[in-house]
Length: 430
Ligand code: LRH
Ligand code: MN
Image (tube, rainbow, N blue to C red; front, side, top):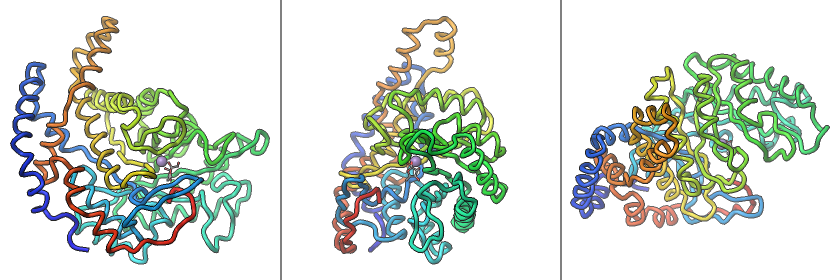
């Protein structure tokens, strides 16, 4: 299929929108100036914001009940990267992809890296997978992997992670995301302490294999597929593991991995204070690990997370460089559209958090002026920063209105023509 979306196409898509953007940007600039904020400064900071795309989310996702594949599904990792290239071409804010192995296994990773480079993409953290059994696998992960009671299973899982690190080095990644499904469905089924100790012993072998400039991102999850206890169930277990393993081990916060109404921004700040906030899997959820589009259910919560991140930046917290990544499952939308909308929602939350007058907030908090302090955050969140987001995209050759541009590009129809539908009826997220 021809070049992803050529620059001329985007310029043509932007032309009819440029004049109104000019007016909207000037009006917002005037409004922010009255609030003591220089709009170009915010636009500059927003231009530097980037989030990694999950390779596993460019195909249609599903649930345990069913999956309804859409037209033009990517059939291999190259087509997944190609689709990610469309999101980046239109948003200029998704320059990297996070691969999942063995879902994204390729014969030549150097060739894959070169292809990604040709469309302006690089690779963020790589993900291992010891939560599914692969054809021909010697030992099953039915009862766990890195914490399994059988050393042979743990060794197999460790070897897989070492393999994923080797692949990541070929791709230019600098982090391994380690999520394990290990846990129990019934009280008594698993020794809660010994399972964690076995996990630590296994993870230490993976940690020892990390290149010097790599991070190990430990991802906690409250439940599923284990429905009574999960070995790395919460941020406490994740932080204990990171602090036990060493300075390259950090904690990754997947927004969907907490009970409803948990104060995730508080967890983020505690992990920042511990110096172990390694990154995020952004998504949204109403009930469980629903993997819905970021900002689509709780946009204020997303804003409050970025408010904590920007506050930490403002307090000059050292070495704070969390990996921003999406982790979603698109069951009823065009995955490319959902990824465009989600990258935009994250950029919007970041831009709004940059509008908060931190000095003023500090004074109001010191004076215990609860009402005005709350109002200051709500005003920032209520600010329509769309002109800033559009200008930041426009300045980097991307689309003023990426969703409209995508729909008028006809990319999905071309993909459907080029990629004959595959009979993959089985349920599951990929
Ligand atoms: C587990 C998880 C993990 C991935 C998987 C696709 O729920 O969030 O990050 O490995 O989803
Ligand atoms: Mn995740």
